[in-house]
Every structure is written in C-alpha cells, then in structure tokens.
Image (tube, rainbow, N blue to C red; front, side, top):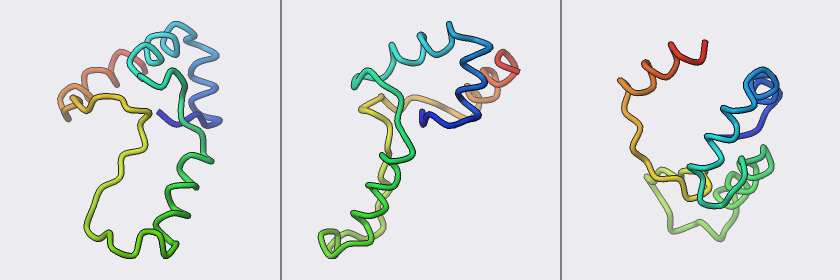
Length: 79
C-alpha cells in the first residue's frame, strides 16, 4: 500500500482500515511515493544493468496472497 492523497482520504473516513492494513505489512508502515521513486531510480541507474524482465514489488515485505476474486470482494466492502 502506497500512501497517497486518495488513500489518506480513505483512511480519514475509515481509520480502522489503515490499522488493519498496517497489521499485514511487516515493515510496519505504508509505502511512500519516495519508496516507488527510489526503486525507479535504481532501475534507471547502472546498478541495475544486469536486471531484466523482473517484477519488483514495493510492498513492505507484505506477503502476496491477493487474487482477483479477493480484490473484487474487498472492493465491494470498501466502497
């Protein structure tokens, strides 16, 4: 989860949702736009010149267990 104006508005309306999401992020915080920018800068630098065809998940060590069905179900509950 990346903290943006949109998520700030959502968490302002539903603070319990933010608490719940933070419990699932081992690093204990939401991501920031700077976290995404740092990954992009790394990929644009020579330090990544031997990396190709990879997906880099910027997710605070959160486990990946989300399916399209789960996203649809959760979307109905949130909105």
